[in-house]
Length: 284
View 1 (cartoon, rainbow, N blue to C red):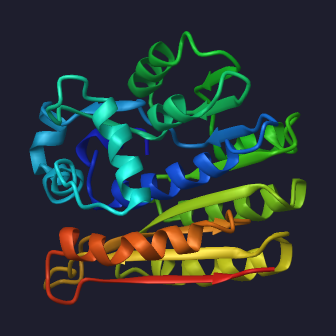
View 2 (cartoon, helix red, strand yellow):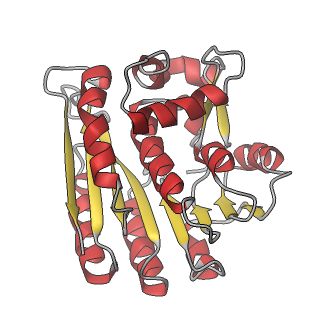
């Protein structure tokens, strides 16, 4: 786990989906005057160079964010997210990609609380330096899954939780599920966002159904599930075909915003004729 570096994957199709959802959730939460708390359990380095050797190794951003960067015909929610990416590149060229802490840094107000967790020593150091001047912020090098007990319920009462581990260790699937249950048990109206990779692996294929069952039992405002499939597994069944986001207690606006964006994402990010999306929700 500690060998994982998100820099290799920065700006890929999975980041596009994850950060589109994150942007919409944070925009919605920022509409109310009362402050809220964002907890990011696997925060990474904050931002990433797409010109660096890590990102250039497989150039995953080339089939992700770069296919949208110069587009002028994007639906409003997608255009808003891309505006944030462009704001992270002041000279206009796509050189850097903002991770979730950078997106949070751009969208949270001074009164909103940010709690970020990152175990990798190098990424933690970069992240701490990046967020050093931000008010109401704590950067921790402790296990993000273990932080839920300390963070929820939040002093602000309103809270959002983002979990996107690497899943390089299969136990991450079970930890995500347990963390969702614990978060909703401690604060049933927390907006819980879970990213997961779409793999031909039992744990991956079962995760969404297990998250739904847990949210059915404990989430005050239902759930939303979105999955974007962009490619096929290789001949041996390996490879990430796409990714999904599961949101417990989603903003009521989220379903329609994603429905507006997903056909275009399939068109622009799809790498084979069978590229598709799933969008489902259970409102309470």
